[in-house]
Image (cartoon, rainbow, N blue to C red):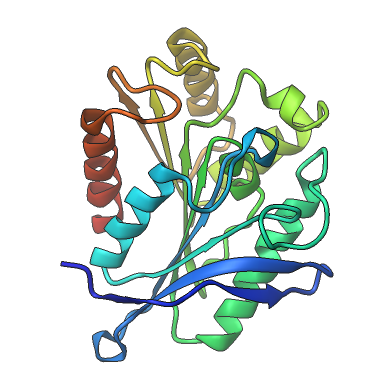
Length: 239
């Protein structure tokens, strides 16, 4: 059952100087929700936007779990102002600003889940852990490890360091989900990368990995999306 009230798309000006097109789902006030999830879409240069079908599926799941859910078009996408950056740094600052603005409006929120899909997972990884005031979790879906350099103008070090910061934070929670039929990153490459992450010196975060059989980068099959929903539902329910 979906408990949220769907709010029509709006725009929000943030401290980075851009105005972002947002879609916010508010739970009913009587449900006393303290959970916020924010979803980041795939690369805009390939048509990514906040209405991407996989994000729609996850939005419905989070609504059913009594979350505030924010989706938004990144700078230069849809009705959002500005221009996409080549490195992702500006998008990372936009994300931080949007989250801080919403937390200021809803100080009762004590749990934040940042969910990034494809290129959006790169940007999601730039958001810091806010604990202990706000328990922070990251869910990175179809992280584009193989094309990461091309997507960020070869600023791969920035994203490697961001992941390390999360992994070495004892208050952090990180979930990686990917399909073994991903068109951009092979299963062997994912397995190698995950092994490297697990061997991070100083690893203290709760770190989980869910490879999904027969799932592509686009999560187009009903079976893959069902497994994806179940994995995320189970993981967020642990908290």
